[in-house]
Image (cartoon, rainbow, N blue to C red; front, side):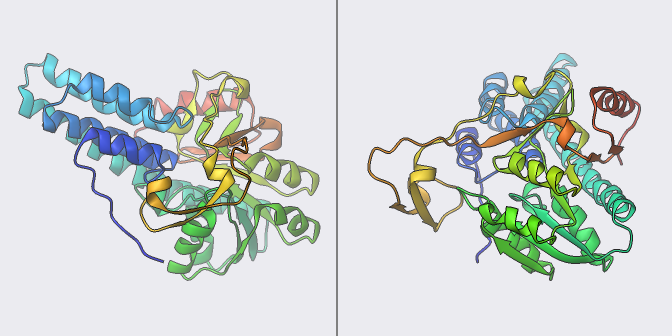
Length: 342
């Protein structure tokens, strides 16, 4: 495995990186969006136009629009207060850096809250955790969301095994989570997505930990496709299903799961396999090998939506929401307006 650094020197390059998943994961999308607005200001672009392009690059992840909005508001305020182009750009960059700092602190707090919840739900330690997609340092300003909780358990000596879904069709679990687990010396095992059911049936899963790209006001959770089946399995097998996400991933303006726009991605991600040699996905990012007849149609949603009744708890930097109901989510959102992280 090889870890590379992608440098985006203009807004179109960053938009492309977001759309091809070279930059992905809810918290990181927010940070990247904010830095993208800052880049536009520093380059002398039309900041409002750049902000719109960035915010619309991926529709489901609410953090992207949030990060763009924070940086754009900082730019507008600086201009309104008489700052010149250089001063406005500096203010925008400061806003992006502050969001980055806050996300790192939120990651640390989520890890602590999540481990405390695991120890409460599963006394005695030795947790066997199943996770899906990638939720570690590669998607965050800190050590991640759900993965950060598993990592905290590992450091505390209470992680017996991390079960890593490969996460089809783009294999973020196999390519990224397994890499991060190995890098941190964690005990982990990779499995195909369709093997999770037999793992539950064998009694080998103590808890499911996933991240989120958008949480609706009623507690419905949009996350990488494949999350909803895990929630159904967890419910049937009486296993806690825990979502770990920063407060900024909760969108009070989205009333319920049916209101979440689910991104539909290209068919080739399903009908072909890739051996990537570059950052991101797409025909230019590796060798794509057909695995279905030419012209095959594919259903390829990037996310699915898990209803609140299947979610045991939502862990945020501000604390834990449980039971997961619209009222409890609203209480957390109200509390967030009174709290400054870090």
